[in-house]
Length: 204
Image 1 (cartoon, one colour):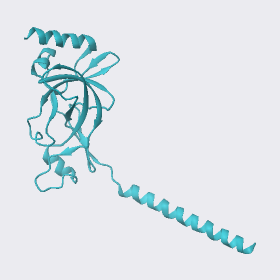
Image 2 (tube, helix red, strand yellow; image 1 turned 120 degrees about the vertical axis):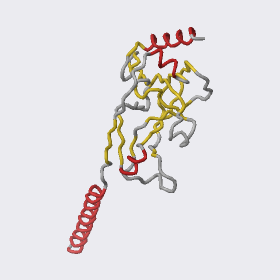
Image 3 (cartoon, one colour; image 1 turned 30 degrees about the vertical axis):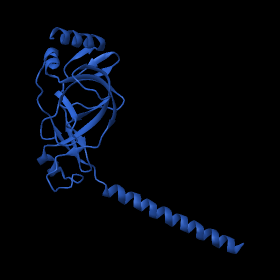
Image 4 (cartoon, rainbow, N blue to C red; image 1 turned 45 degrees about the horizontal axis):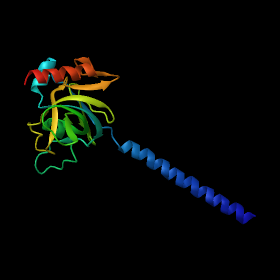
């Protein structure tokens, strides 16, 4: 019986010691992991009519966001793109993030693939969170009507074949409860589809 008690005390001591080591590890990991630095930007958005949006767009699609890919930044040649300080990202012009969108309806343009890659100039990496209140955000599972163009700017060479909004958040309409809502405009969704189709037919 004495041996049993002594053995039990030894086991209890080992368990308590192991739990203490685990707790210390959790505390130190929490301390060592820093929150990313948030950099906020806001660009002015040109006020466009719906007719101007239709005219400027290379393609107009209705689609659902399937996934959001890891954010990137314009790393200088020779720089590890996975590691960036807030200063690096700021000097490069910011972060950008691509979303994969499944096409439900193509209203304008020639595009044969079932999905497309849409870029927004926001994002987050280990040390930096880049926020731009003028840019659209794409939420997986949500549906959008998008007025898009090919990216021909500095980021065009990174993961080519993607599109971007013609006018930041104002040309991205989220479809919610039968309505199409952008940053500066709101329509009944079916009315907007009909308007776009009629406008395109009359311009031919």
